[in-house]
Image 1 (cartoon, helix red, strand yellow):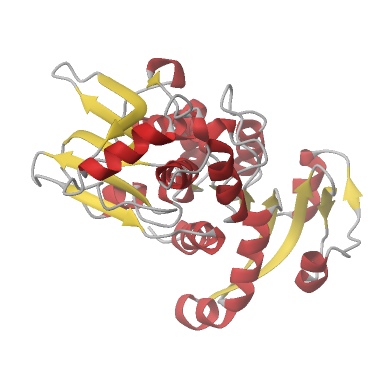
Image 2 (tube, rainbow, N blue to C red):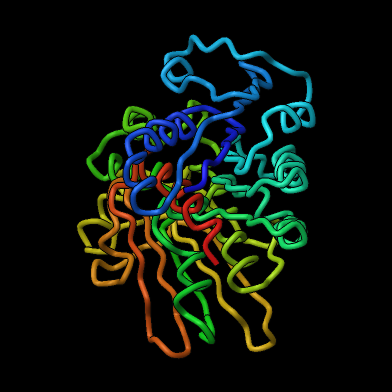
Length: 334
């Protein structure tokens, strides 16, 4: 039995969902994996850097009345909390990936596994951070960055050795799915955004979703880790969904080829990768044609398997949290 000290960098919707999931899965973790845990630190813009030598009361933390002492810097925070695992769920910076990159680096150097749902550090600093993790006998884990809890990175890392990927395509953004389907019903773009926000998949400002940045970051993360291609957002052709109107979307649906925000990457003969994110009509019998609502999917073209499709059906906050929890369980398993 091992008792892990856990720290949360970011404690918004995903972090709180993870804390609740850890509580509900405590018996399974203990009985099936020999894992016990306690929260030793939490950091957010509002709460500051909170850390304790003892366990933080989870119920008080979730209720918002925890009074754990605060320190001034991440170095002091890590020094006081002494975490075995740091969960990083802060907001995405699509331009640089900072400050999450530096936070993850310091966590690894402090002797903690780093588990993130943030695409920025993977796109901009995966090779560097992974090298730091290896050098210190720790793991950098990030399954929740693309399809919430559906296995993408772990699938290729652990179950598909010696396979060559020729390319992939995906529907990576729940917000755009909901907006497009709302407009297919004759309603407005604004009503689609409101529906997505009510479902909990869209931010107050949905620009990263509707303009394609969220999808681009996912394309680049997959390319960086699985294809070993240093693809950056500037390398990906991008077109969002703002130019589509309800009449066009209704006609496409009636034709049996509705629009979706499609992400696609192709491995060229010289090993380079070309990619785009743009609205395209997708036939209902296409591997991605059945993806509706908040569901997400990716389709791989492989040299040994004609096609492999992974679909995450109606993911939610608990799905994302489960991806983080699964990484936690797997971090010490080689």
